[in-house]
Length: 374
View 1 (cartoon, rainbow, N blue to C red):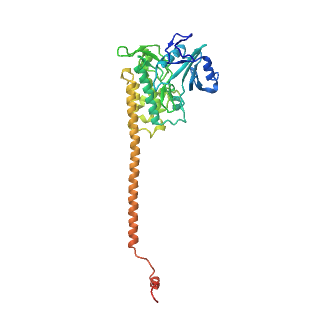
View 2 (cartoon, rainbow, N blue to C red):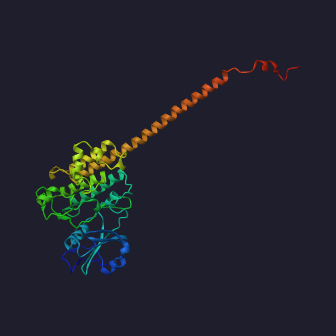
């Protein structure tokens, strides 16, 4: 492992010291047991992801190997290394190191045991509760807000590929934004509100304004996040051609249902009974605003975080209220039952005390006091 500032023979980028480790190809091959298929935990257009028990001094890592025909080529590889080597945030996946040797492009990340958000939304066996989903949305929103505000980079970072497969979940289901191959770094302020760049991203999450004009802004990420929110709420894919034609695009279909006042048709049936009506409306409202056709009318990610945290707080209060109500009802029932029991006992006692013996007259006449002399 090389720890000094380096300049790769295959590229022109230089990394500052102590930000990102450079691994040799032999270290990567040893960690992945020469890229053993048995260790593969993920596949995509970029290549494969391997779960490794150890590399260098690190335990439990994910190794992403980009194949030579990957859509995420050398430029995207360098972009991810540059961006992630400068960023540190609890809601961004940590890049441990990389390898760029003999045409091999490999990235080494911290391992996320609960996979991707997409894994859970598509799995029939997933049991993500509403509160878990809400917390995941908040975590991802915080990560994007950190990128957009330019903390520690002095520049804003636009992710450009926000989607459930790029939101990883750690052991506690905390969300971490990943895959920065398409990320753009640039000064985004009041004097310069956008960057003009080649249109890249994933169909279904792409900001229509960016798609038609090539003008990329932080609000492009906000649009994609709005789609993710509706996916979380409905467990539907952003694009699904197996459905009726008017339902292919989740963003358009969800917005139409909101206009029609048919919000209940959007929600994942598994969540029925877990969401208060008020919070459901507010969540859908936030997602809808993220999808506004005019980027300037979309909220910032900081505003999204605040509103989502407010919804979470309300849901918790609602849950506590239900518990309190149930406790009150239980106590009331117990009190009433107790009073009824006491009343019944008293009534029975009075009955026993005042009742007259029911005896056969003839037998009564024949009975004598045993102490009475004959």
